[in-house]
Length: 155
Image 1 (tube, rainbow, N blue to C red):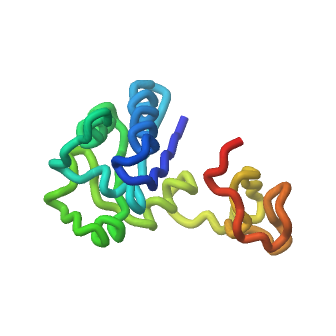
Image 2: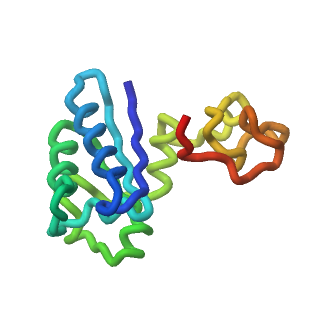
């Protein structure tokens, strides 16, 4: 099973990044899972070396290394790293610089273009209508042309 986790929350201040990496560790332990983790936006900071872990939080640098040692691929948005002043020498062991092209390939499940598949795709109802598809298509339960969507909304 191929699993892609896209994280975008900062390393500390919420539990989202640590919870995402806990799930990644659990998935990486499975023999039947090919795991990929993409850190984008504030989550790119999760992969910075030498952070002082606040009391009560997980050491995310160590967690990233554990995911990688178990075969998970951890990539960081290069633009997001640059915006935060995180250079190659500051990226945690087990993580690496990447970009939108690779995230696109991971999302499509293969190398190359997924344009020919768009018209056949049916996206989950929690995705917003900005996801490219047929012009007359919008997620179930939304108004046509509603661009606000509900990405990340619970249940």
